[in-house]
Image (cartoon, rainbow, N blue to C red; front, top):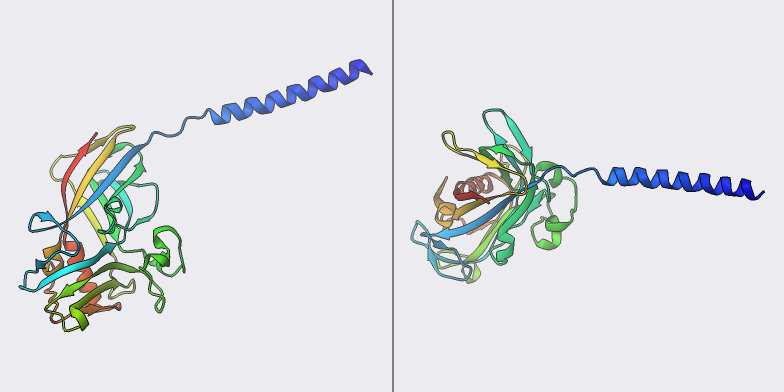
Length: 259
């Protein structure tokens, strides 16, 4: 009996060691190499940082100040136009840069190392998530970017005051959204390096990209947005689509580096 019990104990011990050994081998598998994409959004006006609650003049001579400036950006990817390679960036699908929170204006996401010459993302929220009901994180309705009366998200929210507005207290409000054609306000964005320039991004390196946003172009990049004529936009439609084109036309990559 004593010998038999010892044999059973030895068998159990060997089985446990075998299982642990298998776990160790599984855990020892190296993670794939990773790099980082870091985006910094820099709102500017007349070459200076854009600030909330400061007086400005738009291209039509209308004075105004901003109280809210926030927007959705997401579905980032890096690509190589020549090979057609495109790598989706990992992390959160969407981000909500908000001028009232400077930390939110800079975002970082893991990505595969590689050779790239294009950066793509969308301004807005894709149609699938617009019809998927209430989300969490930055897509939580508590962020104030969801139309409760109309399925879908507000892609861009810009509010302020202007002497040109006929609204009470000179208020102007641009709540831009809508994902249904022909007036979709979702704006695909692609930035392409020129010539033979490439981003050669190695393991553990970070690609830093500065994207400026020119507030003057918001009023006049695609069509003339005069506060006196359109002080309030709160629903999807042709006007919201035109404003989204203005908004997209205000972005420009101004600097990048790899470290």
